[in-house]
Amino acid sequence: MTDLDDPQTDPFDVARLAAAYLAERTGVERHDVALVLGSGWGGAADLLGETVAELPSHEIPGFSAPAVMGHVGTTRSILVRGEDGAPDRHVLVLGSRTHLYEGRGVRRVVHGVRTAAAAGARTIVLTNGCGGLNTAWAPGTPVLIRDHINLTATSPLEGATFIDLTDLYTQRLRDVAHAVDPSLAEGVYVQFPGPHYETPAEVTMAGRMGGDLVGMSTTLEAIAARQAGMEVLGLSLVTNLAAGISPVPLSHQEVIEAGQAAGPRISALLASIVRCLDDVAATTSVD
Image (cartoon, rainbow, N blue to C red; front, side, top):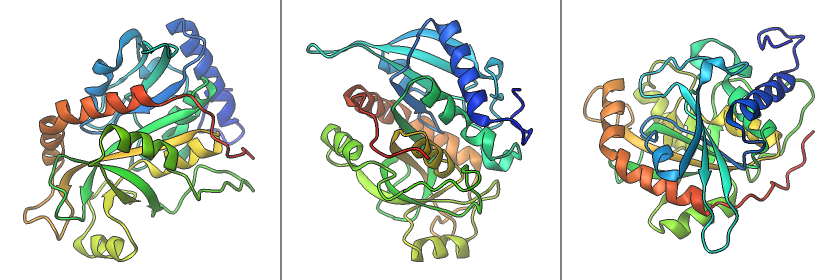
C-alpha cells in the first residue's frame, strides 16, 4: 500500500519503496548525505559535483510536484569526489518540498526526509528562506539554525513515540559549518503554519519566546530526521525583515528576489559545507 493519506499505511514502508525506486532509477545503491533546498538555495546542487541522475519528483512514490514558486520539481543524485584520499560520496538533493500549509498532511511534509533515511543518508542539511528579527541580518544573510520553536501544533511522530530533541541541530555539524565560514551567525528558527505571513504581534511574540527567524518549514522535517537517526544541519537565508520590523509590506516576490541576489554566494557556501560533512551516523536511538 502506497497511499500516505491512508491511516492504515505505514509511512516508513512508503519511504522504503521510494528509496528502492531511487536506487533503481539512479543506479546508486546508497546515498550518504541528503540536502533539502529551500528558497534561494537551489544553485548549490550545481556546485557539488557530477549529477548522476535527475528525476521528476512527482514520479517517486509518495512525492508531489512543488506548489511554491522558487522550489524545483526534481530530485537529483550527485556524486561528490573525495579529496586528499577521502572516499567518494553520493548526495541526494531533494528540490521538491511539501509545506504543511498545502493541506497534504504531515506525512507528506516529512516523506522526503524519511525517503533519504531509507536511502542510507545519515546526515541531512535542511535549508529555507525566512524572515529575520535581528536588524543586523540584512536580506541575503545566511544563519545557522541552533534550535527551533514549532508553532504548527502538530508533529510527524505518531502514537507513543518519544524522541529527544536536545541536540536536534547537531553541534558537531555546526562546528563544520563554522570551520568553513567563521562569520556565520546562529539563531532560533520559529515555524508558523502559514501560508499567511506573521503579524507584527506574532513576530514580537516569537522574539520574546527566544526566536530569531520566522518561517513556514523545516521544524517538522528536522524532527522526522532525528526520529530516523540522522544528524541535522539547518541553514536559513534571511530574505526579508519580519513583519513589524520591515518598513515595507511583505511579499513572496521579495523572498524570490532576495534569494536570487544571494544565490551565487550562499550556494557556494552550502556546497563547501556539504563537501566537508562526513558520513557519521547520529547517536540518537530510534524508537
